[in-house]
Image (cartoon, rainbow, N blue to C red; front, side, top):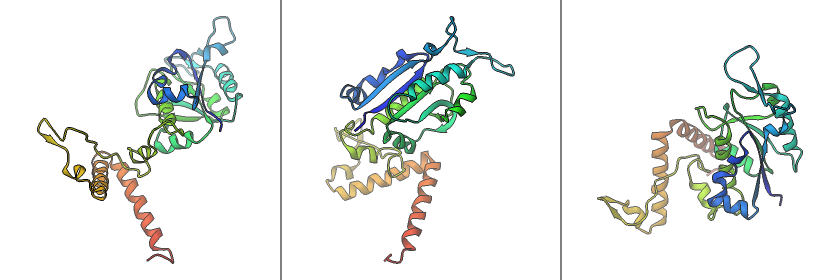
Length: 248
């Protein structure tokens, strides 16, 4: 099986692997379950000042990463190994969600472009058919932190990285589409607060029902958008079953 391969294009290659060199991701990196290489965008500059940016056409504040320099960096990464999707981390991109994470994790890897300054010349994004991805509705100093988040989310889903495969299914944004239920551990009493009795009952069916009910309650209260989507999917699934000739 081909090793999952991440290439990060950045002006600050020393930021990687960073926290990805620790814990589960770090162990998986050392075990060769995935590979992370960085390419310094500045190394693809062609002038003696190693310039990577220029003023925006039409005026305005800040600087924009040049298309020729960025394209050379992207091309070098894409030329190595299997064909991988190229992603540009930007606040205007499509939201990073678990569905996209799962899609990327089952592929051969990713090429991630970390923007800086005011962003990247649009022409190279279009020329390379890059997917623009956002980790949230806020602005960071650059795409590196977003790249770390995306990579962490993908790496933990790679085969052999997580100890219990079912953990990925039950956690927030897992297969159910719900937020995760609350967790408790010993001691059973702490500062006047008790573990819910059902979790100490030993009745696995009741525990499963409680966890499902709590996941639904939390999703309804905290993420009505997710609850609406989940409710709509369940309703559609029920209609499909009812319409089957062999439905009871």
